Image (cartoon, rainbow over the protein chains, first blue to last red):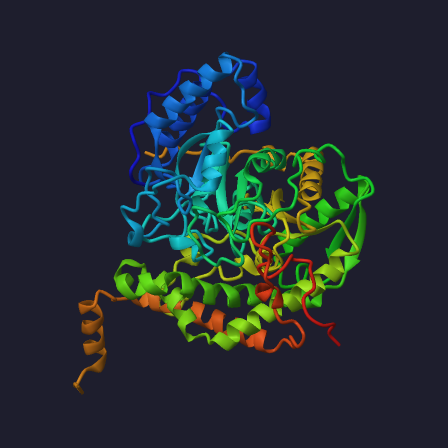
Length: 487
Length: 82
C-alpha cells in the first residue's frame, strides 16, 4: 500500500461500515448519521486493517483529507435540505484503472507511475454529482490482465475471510475493501469476470451490467469490445442504488448505449413469483465443477423454486466454448492497447503480465476475426436459450478459493487460477448483465457465489432475483470472522 | 555469435535489456501460453460460416444513434446456420 495520507484518530464509537448503503442512507438523510462520522470510520478501518505485513493491501491510495473535507461539505448540504439521494455522503473506492482528476491512475503498473488524471472519468463524475465521497484508489492485477488478484508490483491483495487465500481479480482491492467493511461500495471492471469472481470469493455482491450500459470514458482499456464497469457492494439492493447513478449514455464512449435507463430498484421487492429461471444441464453443472460449489448453488435453486420461481432446464453444450472466445478476443485487443507502450517500456511491466500481452503477438489477424465470428455464433445460441427464460442461474466460479501459494507459480508449476473465469467470461462475450451473490460457504469457511444472468439491458430482473434470494437467506449479512489487527 | 554457454549469454543479454525473468515467471508464462493456444484451437474448431460481425461496418446517422459495435448481444448478424 502506498500514497496513503494519515488517517484521523479512531472515532470513539465506530460506525458499522459493514452496514449496507440501504441501511446507512436513511440515517444520513434523517441527520442521525453524519457523513463525517462515516468517512472517519472508514478511514480508521482502512488504517487498522489495510497496511502492515498482515494487512489486506486493498488500497493503493487513500485521500483522507479530501474525503473528510468532502464529507463535511455533504453534511452541511444535507443539514441545509440539499440531500442528493442514497449515495450522498457514502464513501466509495475506485479500481485504479479509473481516472479521478488530480489523482494518479497507475493500472497497478510501474508503467504509469506518476500518471496524473487531468479530469474525472464519467463514472467518477457521476458519483461526485450524486454526493458520494471518493475515498481512494484500489489495488488490482497489473492493467487488469489476470484473474488471481496477485500483483508483484503493488503487492498481493489478501482475502478478508482468510489472508492466506486469493481474492481473485482483477478487481481484487475493490472486493477486499468492501468485504472487510472498509467501505460500503467500490467500482470494479469486468472483461473476463473481474467484478464477479472477486465478489464471489470475498462474499459480496458484484454486478457486471450490460455492455454499453455504463460509460468507460476515462477508464483504461483492457479489451474494448468486452470491457464493463460495475458496482461491488454488500448487497444486491446496493448494486441497484449504484446503477441508478452510474448508468446512462455518454457520447465519449463509442460503445455507450442509448437504451432508456430504468430505475434499477424498481423490481427489487417483486419476489420470484412467475419468473422462469434457466438452469443449464451441462458445462456450468458438469462433474468437473467443485462438488461443494455445485451443492450450494443447487440448494439455492431449490430454495428459489420453493418460493415461486419456475425452473427450466436448458441444454447448453456450446457454452463450453465461451471462455475460449473470451480469451481469444481479449488477447488480441490487449496487444492493440499495449503495443506502443510495451515496445518502449517493456522493462516496466512485470514479467508475467508482459508475457501475457506478448503472447497476443503470436495470434494472427485471421484468428482474431475467427474469434469475433465465433462470438456472433455464440451470441446466437445464447439468445435462443435465453428466449425460454428470464434469467440463468449458474455457479460464479467452478472451483473453491485457492490459496495465494496455490496461485504463485514456481519452477514446474505454472500456478493455479486459470479455471477461475471459465463461467464468468461467457457473459463478457455476450455482454449480458450478470450478477454474483453469496450463496453459502465451503466447509473450509470460504464464501461461494452464485451467478444470475439476464437478458441484455434487463438488469432490473437480474437484481430482482438477487434481492429475492438475499431476502430468503443471510449469507450476504455475514462479515468475515474477526479480522485481526494488521500490525 | 556462438559461445560455449548460450544459456548464460541469453540470461546476460536479458538482464542487460532489463528483461530478466525468473524461473517462476517462466513457469507461469508457459501455462498462460498453453491456455491461449488452447483457446485459439477451440475457436478454429467452430464453424462460424454466416456469422460475420458485419454490424461494425454499418454506418450510423451523424449526430445520433448508438454505433453498433458488434451489435446488440442478442442481435443476430449474418445468415442462419445449418
